[in-house]
Image (cartoon, rainbow, N blue to C red):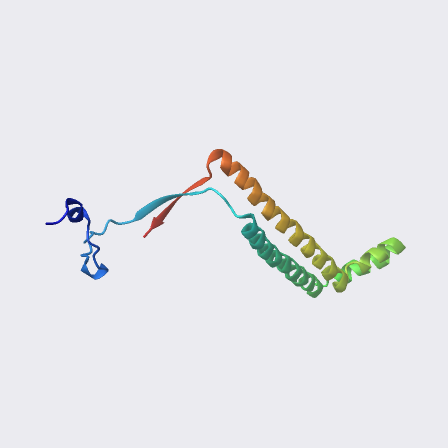
Length: 145
């Protein structure tokens, strides 16, 4: 004779023995999610990479713009105007429009932009986490087609 508690214990089945359910196509699945926290370290890394890319674009755009203006003879016309005005201070100002100085200035701007945008990205992640604790986060509905 078997004890009554032995009959109630379910026997484990193999995965192969299980019959899958046949679900009809239900169409588009929608899942509601909440972004309740942003990791500051990942935000720092992402903002660093994006700001480096923007810094490189600033330097390249400066070089392209300088070469376009040079091919249109803008710099030579400005230089001719400064020479006709015959002012020592204006002639020194014209030296700042040389290619090397303009690119050096754009590199400095790119480095400052990288530092500031990286710090800003991490700070925004921290601020988002504080606000998300108060209001519950950012609600998003994701669809699967």
